[in-house]
Each structure stands twice: as C-alpha cells, then as structure tokens.
View 1 (cartoon, helix red, strand yellow):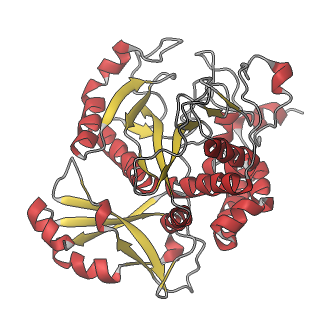
View 2: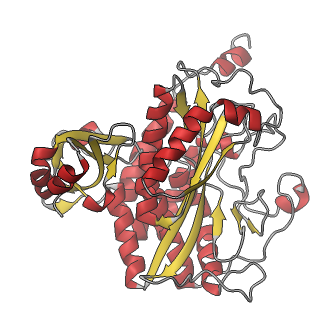
Length: 433
C-alpha cells in the first residue's frame, strides 16, 4: 500500500523521513503527506557533508529513501509519521550509511540461512533541564536499584513511555529504576536486528521528547556522573533459521542451553572484542563506564575484561538462559545499526572459522584479581580501541574498508579534539607544579 494511502487511513499529515549518521545522530526532513509517494520513490535530498558521513561539500546530494515497513506514528502527535530511510548517492546505496551496513550483513547471514534477533536494554538518566543534576532530589539511596518510591515518583513519565511503545506493538514487559540515582530502564520484546535497531533509534527520540514535555532532560550518556553507575545498553542475541521459529542457539542438552553454533558465535565475539569495542563504545566517555571505579551502589555493573560466563553479571558476556546470550559491552552512544552489523559480522566469523570461546568463567571478575589478571583487558581509551579496529581484518573485510575508514577518520579526529582540551582536574593537579 502506498504511503499516501496509509496517511489517509491513519490521519497522518506529515512524515519525518529519518536516518542516523555514523555518530548515531538522527537526521530528518518533514515531508507533507501529499508528496510522500514521490519522496518514497526518489528520496529526500540532504547535503551529506552537513552530517557525520565522511563526505565533503564537493560530493553530490544523498537521498534518503524511506522504508514503508518502518512506519511509526508519533504517539504524542499522531498526525506525524516517522520513517527510517536508506541512503543513496549517485544512484547507488551509500556504503557508509549505517542502516545499509546492517542490511548488507543481514543479507550475508540470510544467504547462509540465518537471521539474527536482538533485544536491547537502553538505560537512561532523567535530569534537571540544565543537565546538571538528577531530576529527583529525593532519590538518594546508596543502593537505589528497583527503588519503588523513586520509581513511582516518576510514574507519569515512565508509564507514558511504556504506554507509547505498547500502542506501537513493541510488547514492553517491564520498567524499573536502575542501579544509579535518577536512572531508569524500559524493556520490550526482541525482534530481528533491523527492526530492533529502528526501534532503538526511535526509542531515544521518544524518551527525550516525552521527558522534555514533563519538564526533565533525558540522557543516554554512558557516564554522566563519576560516582554513579553508567548507562549501558545490554544486547541479547540469538540466531534463528531464517523464516522459521527454529532457534539455532538453543540446545537443551548443554549445561547452559546453548548450541555448538552459539559457542562458535561467542568465540567470534571474544576473538574480535577489542576492535568491536570501538564500534559499540565509540566515545571518550564510553571508557569511563567500562573502567570506572566502584560506584556508590558498590558495583559498576560494566565489563572490563574479555570473557563469558553463565548467569554472572561481572563478565562481558552472560548466558542468562538457554538459546540466547547477553553482550554487556555496548552503550547507547553506539549507532544501533552499526553496532548490530559489527556484532553479527564477528559472530558469523566465529561460526565460519569454528572459533572456540574457551571454558565458561564462573568467578567474580571484580573481586578475584588473580583469575581476572589471566583475562584479556578491554581497551582503556577510545584511541586504544580505534587502533584495534584499524588492525582487525575480520571487521575490515565484513563491513568494508570504506566504512571502517570513514568511522576511524571521524573518531580519530574526535580523540584529537578531546586531547586538546585542558580539564579542570589537570589544572588543579598541575597549575602549581
């Protein structure tokens, strides 16, 4: 059915034709419903250099062609429809456009008869409008996770967010106050990797918009407060036989409920973990979450070593139950499409190369220093992670050198800009030396 016809049926007057650049920033044009069919055919024109896509002012326009299957009617403004778009330039799909990268990796998996399904847990803080403090001054417990009182003080907003995604058919199943003061999480059902990435992009937009309407500011920043637990985006992964209900990661005969394929997938993730870190933890601030000191709650809940375990939250990969694994590495500054594409790429490498993840680790990484020292460490800075990515043949081959080169170029520039800043801590430590 044409988008114009759907607009008439749903009462949509305008469409946001949207894409996420390599930084994960959502970009859009507001298109009247009367011309949406023409835009769906030709694409909405953008100057590529104006967003983070490693293009120049000399490059021709990019065209965002909306995917009709991605249509979401804004729950807070039903006359507007949101559409995820694929980017084209010079009559070809733009290689470094993140949604294109994910679709290409899904095609690779599909040719093998596989379909990756993902579920995400995006954590966020609710802040004062100026962003300087958490929004609830009474949220003061040293262990605030699941705090009923603090959760219900934000009932109006949290329930509005949950109601919205329920109306959209995402099947949300729980909302909670997280481990940091002022921190929350809302969970919804898993889906194929592309659908989940579209929803994750829209979820951030929805949460920020509704938070503003309630007088707050929402942030998904990995580590906004040094003394509090950071925002992660734990990602649940399972591989299915394409077009079926057959979960290829499930094996009831295994102690953890995982198949041989699942362990090979894990082996691929562990093999390329340092390079993967650059894509799923792509900011300077990301590494403040990964290598944080103990927080006021007593735990950072974030990985700092490369390992996997059963139902043990101190490791990079957790096996919560049979048929799926939880990658605890990612944060919300990652582009959801690029992150899913990279995870799928290293997982497929593990399957094809039959990489072995080694034995499950059951100790506490945070407290057992002797055993932890035997594990590889995650990169300690963005620069370290970028160097690993540059040298990683798996991701360069799978994602394409043009994609990786564009990502590295922008992130290396970001690192240099950060390195040129003199922090208040440096000044205090050094001014009288």
